[in-house]
Length: 84
Image 1 (cartoon, rainbow, N blue to C red):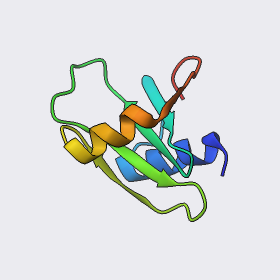
Image 2 (image 1 turned 90 degrees about the vertical axis):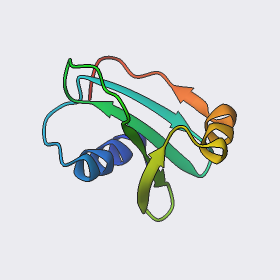
Image 3 (image 1 turned 180 degrees about the vertical axis):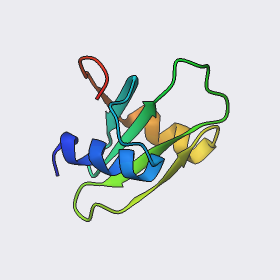
Image 4 (image 1 turned 90 degrees about the horizontal axis):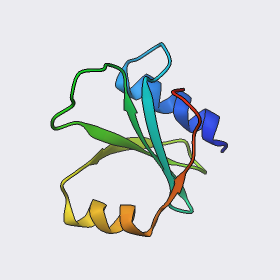
């Protein structure tokens, strides 16, 4: 799966049809983690979306979580120009 497909899945999960105002994406090897922001307002208590590259299955990626911080620490941030 390509990153563009993962971003489209994340938008569906977030229930958002436009471009993200800001987006951060990470590659864990077998999954993408996407954090998308749709409003200029500060976000408190949000979540990212973890997307399996092989199956396309997604789940919420909540922080703080000791397990998820460990996953995020070992992931590689993907540089993205602008929102998406």
